[in-house]
Image (cartoon, rainbow, N blue to C red; front, side):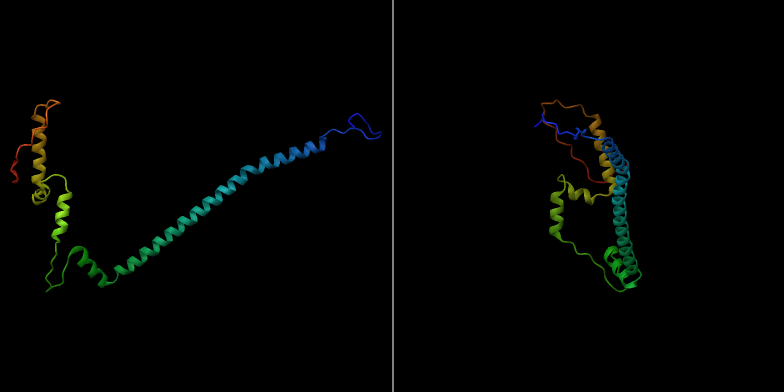
Length: 162
């Protein structure tokens, strides 16, 4: 059949000039509209993110307004002063109960055996002890790598008057 030719029926090219122009116009439209469409989609996502942030900020403002209203109540302020600052009304005897089991677990989890003794010393004694320890470490000769570390010298736990 490929060899047969029908009279009056000429072979037409596959793409006419009109089809080529139409394809070029459609490609141009796609290229022209791609960037604005992408910008539109990204702006819509930014708008939704801003709305979510604004809603979160509104919720925070409402929560802070409720908290401010609570602090306007004198009874709430008294309760907070009692709980947080350990205040007491005139005529009352304030006390704080200490759980001995909680103290034992706290001291066992601290580093070193002198955990409770360090807490009993004033802060300035700890500062001087650290200065003395740094001075002693600077004066000591370096130990041989194979030798076991030397035990620390015994220290007086009383405050120093330097």
